[in-house]
Image (tube, rainbow, N blue to C red; front, side, top):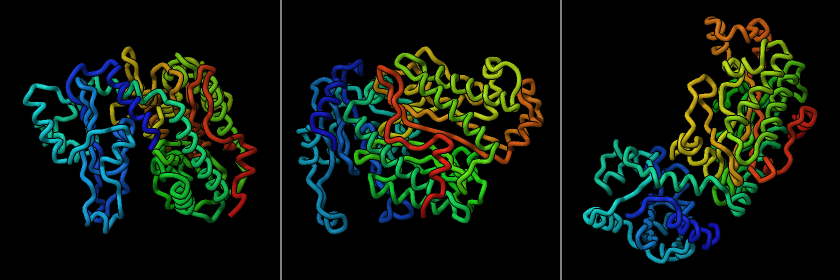
Length: 466
């Protein structure tokens, strides 16, 4: 856990913020989830917002914050003898609660009684949208709102307050993210060393998992580790690497307090980029460099994304893959044939931070609307940046055969795209370069240790050992 004062301060901030004016804030913790039978659960992951305000990292515990009295209370059960036999000793709830600065505890069964009393008295119950079916079913039992409607009754003011608090990272949180990114860099160095002909993607992916477990809390998401990098979220791992392939690894580790890292690197299998691979890699790197330089407080991330698009398009035009005006091509969305996703997202306790609260509420300001244009419509973060935000910056260039075939058959954007030239590059696959960036008063600061991304430095690391 973080310091006791941190959790007290965070809960006090709720009482001081623009928030629901009265009633109870209900924060449900997560429960163990069976993988294929009850005694074989998935690895437990606590709800991130519950962690943020209460810090208790174990199943079957819930929290209430009384907006009228300011009191916080935790509900859970102490381990019984059966729990101790199978899972070992665990401190009683009152001791764990005290570490988070909570003085009042009760058995978990008391939560339904307390909520029923509040509802009978006409007190509002404010909760966040459930993202697991089990949460929705619990909310139904606790509030009487049917499970299929609980998301509709989630408290908008409560969501807005949580987004406001969790978006700006404290020094304590940045230290945790730095720790996660340091471990993430270890993953990528290991992947670079293993990018050798004859090895399988699964060998590399397995090494990443082991390193993440041994240095923190494991992976922050299931990695993409593939020579088919044009498949944006490729979790197959079944292929054997050959000389001349590009291995794309998008992976992240978590810190001891569950803060995330998220980095992408591409490495040539066998140690050398081909000419075509290198010029495309340099185009993506130029786009990323320009985007990071554009990061600053007050700058809408949508504009940072578009800057990356313009720089990538300029390079693609120099290579003969695109033609015409850079501005016109980007405005039309022609570049999205090669770059069909958004530039990045918020990062913190979740690798896509707070995405369960609604991407529009986290990533877009009230006066912004999501574009319907292909590519731009997947932009997760568009809002003006603030000091203390941590964001990913991850432009890419991909040659997706099905997408190219469809656009070419439709004649889509043929004023800007030379499809004959594109066909000569289709075997390249995909290239993406990603770093985690802290927004400071001076601009964007890349977090973590230096991890090679200049092409010569990447080649030096590729297949260098074991």
